[in-house]
Length: 465
Image (tube, rainbow, N blue to C red):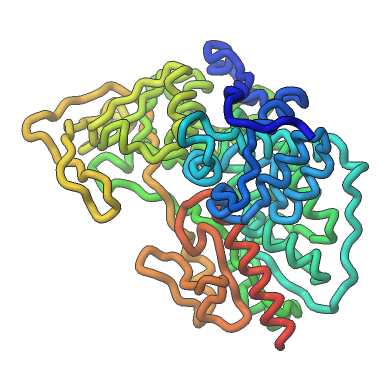
């Protein structure tokens, strides 16, 4: 067994040079090789009561898989992760480890925490590269059918668990590619689509899960039709939160104002950066992205790669930025301009109705709000304008009301999120829900956790039924 200890410095991870990567859509982080992964794994203390596991929304046995890596047993590590996660290569790249598993790592008290995310990514990628070692036969059918609405992380996780229990599972995806937000929302340079997402989806399909694309539940067919006409015994709604929010300020109807969702979908799902794809996308020379979350970072870094002079405008200070520290760091390395304590009040247009600028006001931080963050307050008389030809609103999203409006007995919150209990049961019998459709926009791993909880609840419901 490899020696473990906390005196070994954290193994650095290789990345593309910022000046080069800001001009391409290739992956920024290059990940660990086998030697680097094994070295980093030896830092794990194998705590008897691991806080990292408690902080993981799907409860991955982190000391277990890391211990296998330290011993050179990569397949053993992949098998352990596979007990709790069907998307290790995805989660290793995009999950906020610094506030979850790594944020709870004991090593982080005095030194740098274990690079759990990078180790999970390495293990997941190794599994993708060695499919012959992970042949999975579909489970023995139990005669019951479950429909999954949405092929994002919640839907994929729910489908995986149910398929392993012998259910006949069909995923219905509204778009032409499976993967949900993993495909349309997260840029290629953070999460490769064909090399990673498509392979993770294939892993789920190997369990016997069927995926039907271009099916909009609520329009192509309803939840009631799935239950009454199509013969499904239960339905899980993991349709995400794809309805963008805007500020409601003057000028938002000008040509050149978009939601980050639309901009990223055109870029990610429709390959707008590749010349051979004839994707309609409004490429500006100077683009202002309003917001401070991960979606704002994705949008501004995409804008940079599309050739724009890209600027972030955020109404609080950098300390309150909700985006991952790594994403902010990468954006700064790539030359993104951050305008903190700045809030738009009006978008300016020219005589043809196109964006030509944005009027902002300077802010200062006042007392904490309900979330604990200090509320921004306008500084009187501090208005100023910035020249731009595109404004991207990255202010969060809420669930699309289509399913709610076409499904009787399905209650929602005032924010339009589906009402569901801890196990995912909605107010409609036989219908379960989880992920962003219930919580609003959150993280991949939280959506996966919700999908797995709902799978267990569906199994219990149908077993009793």
